[in-house]
Amino acid sequence: MKVKVLQNVFIVAVAVFVITTMVALFIEYRYVSSEQEKEFREQAEYMSDLISASGTDVLKKVGSTEDIRLRVTVVSVDGTVAYDSQEDAAKLPNHADHEEVAEAFKDGKGESKRYSETLGRTTYNYAVKLADGRVLRVSQECFTVWQLTIRLLYPMAIMLVLVLVFSGVIAARISRKVTEPINAIDPANPELRDAYPELQPLIRRIQAQNRQLYEQMNELKEEHKKQDTMRREFTANVSHELKTPLTSISGYAEILGAGMVEEKDVTRFAGKIHDEAQRLITLVGDIIKLSQLDDKDEAILASEPVDLYHVSEEMMSVLSDAAAAKHVNVFLSGTHEVVPGSPQIIGEMVYNLIDNAIKYNNENGRVQVTVENDGDGAILIVHDNGIGIPRAELPRVFERFYRVDKSHSKEIGGTGLGLSIVKHGAAFHGATVQLDSELGMGTKITLRFPKKASGDNADSAEVTAEQPETT
Image (cartoon, rainbow, N blue to C red; front, side):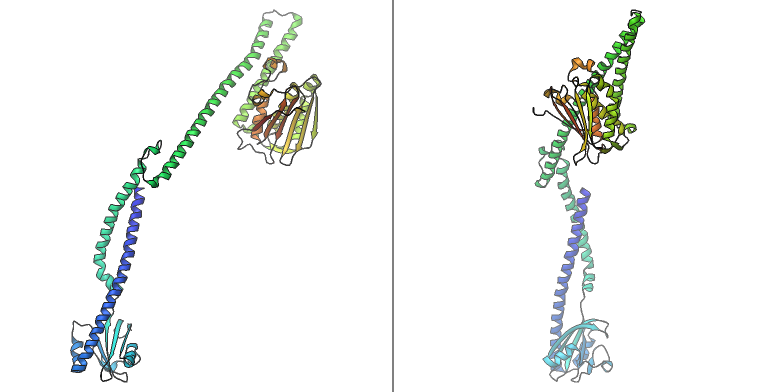
C-alpha cells in the first residue's frame, strides 16, 4: 500500500508541475510578447520623430547599430522600397500590399505578425506614416514559446527536482499516516483501535465478517457435535443390531453342537439359525447401501431413465409373498412417469416404502401405490390403512435404526434403516419426501421428483411430516 501511495503522490506531483509550468509559460509568453511589442512600437515612434527632425540619413546609423536587432524599411508612396537596413532595396518587391504598410498609408499606423521569407522567421512589423507621405516600417523577430522554454529550461529542471524530492517526503509521510492505523487494526477486535473516520466502513465490515465467522464456527461446532452424536448412536445401534442375531446364532449353534437338541427339533433350530443369518445379511446389506449413498458410490449412482410405474410393479411382485402372508392387498394405479436417476436406488426406495406399508399394516389391510404427474414433476404415493405413527414420533422416523415400537421390532422384522434409505435416495435425486400419518388411521408417504432430477447439489432431502386432520 505504501508503494501505491508513493506512486500516486509522485504522479499527481509531476502532473501538477507540468500543468503549472505550461500555464506559467503561457502567461509569461503573453506578458513578454506584450512588453516586447509595446517597446517595439515606442522605438518605431521614436525613430519616426528622429527622421522627421534629422532626415533619413539617421537610418543608416540605426541599421548598423549592433545592439538593436531591428530591420528598418522605408516604403515610398507607390509601394517601392526606398531603403532597407538588411537587404538591397532594389531587389525587394513592392510592399504596397503588406498589411502593416497598407494600414499605415490609410490610417497613419499599422502592425502585423507573419512569417518573413526574406528573414526565414516570424516577425512583428510596425509601420508609421512619415510627414512626407512615405511609410517607415520596423521589423523584429518574435520571441517564441520555445525560446522562452529554452531560456527557462535550467530553472525548470531545478524546480522539477525540488518538486520530486518534496513530493517524495510528503508521500512518505502520507503513506505512513495512512497505513499505520490500518496495520494497527486487530482483526479480532477492530473496534478497540481508534482510527480516522475513513476507516470506519472497513472496521464495520471486519466486525460484520467476524460476527459471520463466529456464527459459522458455532454452527460448525454444533454440526460437529450433532454428527458425533449421530456417529456414536449409529455405532451403538449397529453393534446392538449385529449383536442380537449373532448371539442367537451362537446360542442355537452351541446347543446343537452340545447334542442337547432332540432329533425332531434339529430342523427347527436350523431354521432359527437361518432366519437370524438372513436378518444379519439384510442388516449388513442396508448398512452397505447407506454407506454407498453417503459416499456417492458411482457403481450404484449411474443415472438413466427410470419408469416409476414399472419399478412399483416389480417391487410389488417381490413383496407379494409378504403381503399374502399378512393378507394385505396391494394396488397400483396411475401413469408411466419416467425420471432420470439410479434404477438401483429408486428400486430400494420403492421397495422400502411398500415393505413398510405391508409390515405396519393390519390383517386384511390395504396398500395403494399411485404414480402420477402434477405438472411440476412425477409423484409416487404409498398409502396404507395400517397402525399409523404417533404425532410425537413423526420427526424421528427417518433416523437410522429408529423404530416407533421397539418392543415388537423383532416380530415385525426389518432393520430400522428403510426410511433412512428413502430419505438419502430422495436427496440424491433432488426429490422431496412428505409424511402424513395418524395413529390407528394409516400412513401416507409422497415422493415428489422434480422435472429435472439431479443429486449433484443435494446433500439432504426435504422431509416434511404432517398429521392429517381427522375426518
